[in-house]
Amino acid sequence: MKFTFAIGIGTLLFGLPLVAQEKTSAAASATTVVVATGVGVDADKSLRNAFRNAVEQAVGLIVDAETVVKNEDVIKDQILTYSDGFVEKFDRVKEGKRDDGLYEVKIKAVVKRRQLIEKLKEEKISVAKIEGESLFAEVVTKLDAEKNAAKLLEKALDGLPVNILTATVADPKPRIVQKNDAGVKAMWTVVVGFDYKAYQENVLPKLREILDATAKRKSNSEITERAKASGADFSNARLTPVKRLPLWDEGQYIMGGAGQVQFDDQSELLVMLNVGRSTTADTRRWKWYVVDRDSTAPVFNAALARRQAVKITFIGAEDKVVRNEEIPLTDILENSSYYNPGGNDAPLWFLHVSHKGEYKTVEISPFVRTIVENGGFYFLYGNAIEASYQAEFSLDEIKEIREIRCSVVEMQPRRR
Image (cartoon, rainbow, N blue to C red; front, side, top):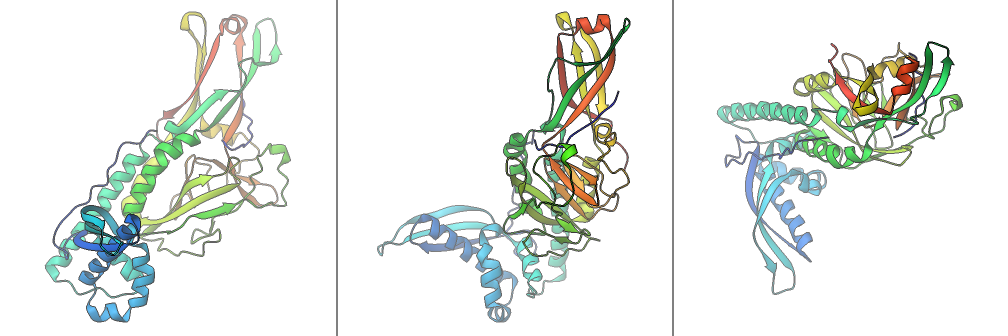
């Protein structure tokens, strides 16, 4: 059996409601409950102003008055501008038009106090001193939050990427490679790829929800990555128009025109989440998240240890199985001259890491990605892999085959 391939570009997630832990103690809880009013020209504008006022109140509970005045511009630009992101949930207490024609809404809002504190510290704004007992409670709450975040992430990644991987036979009719009196050697083209629609509809929303709520820091806007032409000639590899554009430089900085974002690779992981792409994937969109390393690395390690295989079943009359075989996905890549087995970055599916073992970054994307050596190393993104499957059949077996069924299945996890 031999595989050749070409890179081209081609879920279940469980309902994971992120339940806010609503507590009334501002000093000891992960959230703070406040009542705020917003006024605007319409219902939407008034609600946004109510969010802003709610977060402003929460800042006042964390930062002393003198510090607030001293850092007024920073709080206004870096905190209140993104107030929507700090509101966990809210209830409308009262709303309606006023006599002056403006719209007014009063809300009871649950503000993410822990994330707000982290953002204030990130902007080098000192938070008010907290009593020892309250500080202990906050540390415990943060540890609990990290554990819960890891559990949510583990649940979100459960069953992936098998749930969104597809396998089909390009043409049920084989190409006969050899033939003799005893039998034949036949070849089929098997296409393995991702169901990108399933990723967008079932996987991406939950991953965004979880990472948005649990990340220590995150991008406020998307990074658009456009493929750039390179001098390497990949014409023989039957590539899509996708070339290359590395997202990171030695695992330390995010690239792609959105500036550089540093993170502590000893205590933090950088997660790049694909949030969209063009049909051919020559334009891709991302969001970055900085997450706690200790709590999330074991989750990613477990997901990276999963192994997938293409299951090919040849069916005869009356649904009789003529032959059944499972081929590891790694074999499809490793038998290609375009795969660099000595490289740092293994061609993992769905989850890609910056360095094997002690990795610093994690990329979550429904792409086939590998490393190609042709005058240098290049990351290539593809929709699918076309693998040539060939095997020997007796004449009786080949006559029996009525149907070929393909799927991607989970194998026993490998050790990392």
